[in-house]
Amino acid sequence: MSSIRVIAAVTVIVALLGAARAGASQSGVLRPWREVRCRDWVAGLSFSHDGRLLAASVSDARSTGPPSVELYDTASWRRVRVLPYQWLGGFSPTSHLMVTISSREDEIRNGAVSVWDTRAWRVVDELPVRASSAQFSLDGRSIVTSRNIGKPNEARRMIETWDSQSFMRLSAREERDSPPTPEVWSFRRTTVEQVTYLTFRVRDRQSGRLLCTLRERAGVHSVAESPDGRWLATVGVEHAVRLWNPRTGRKCWLLEGPPEPGWALAFTPDGKLIAAGGHHSRVYLWRVPRR
Image (cartoon, rainbow, N blue to C red; front, side, top):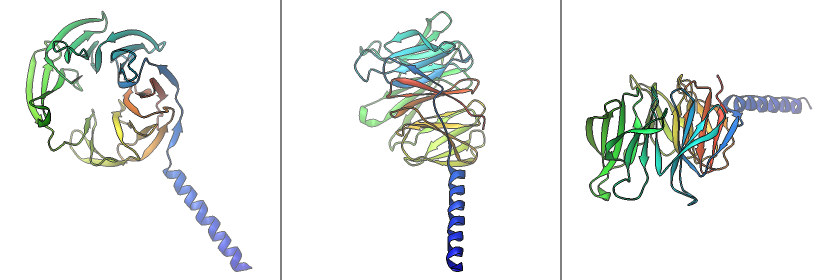
């Protein structure tokens, strides 16, 4: 009888230890703080430098209209403006400027890069280039555009840099994507490099030192870094946003809510909120945990 009691006690202890370890490795779960309904599925997100506006790049996946950039007032979360036939490039991190790419299908306008003054909502300049992507540099001093060149099967593209005040071209370089180069996301403090479909290396942006490796459960479409560098966020095939510690690679929080895969992420400039969008035609917002 005593041996049976000993075995039972050992079994209980082992179970408790296993539960404790599992609990320590599990991430906390957060539900959305707010939802913002968009016209169609969301392919990109960006907050203005003062946090007063949220821009959403809305696709025409359901053929309800042309792609557009929808602008939302973050005080009321109401839609205040729609820019039709535009893809979102993003807001400047330091000024009132925003860049978009024309989605019109005619040869003259398709890919036109427009720089907007968001105080008056007028185009202050149009870059002399037809691009597939455009965004501001991390310091806001330049605009970086990318466009395909050569034949479709050559996998060549031109990366050009433009001054964000004079809009003059500063530099140009050609890149080849054959063999395909890994996806890399660059932020103020870190860079995130995709190693395999589910594995990502996080490096210190200044020194290049390896900080950790993230191991996802499903494919990733977007990565974002919080303004204070405390969190890395990922979203993709799995219907949730994950918050990671960029120093340790620990998965700390699971942000639940989206019923379908996500494509876009953005933190507010003060780091208090994170937004995610995707096929669900909504932008989900969560309060960012402090730890």
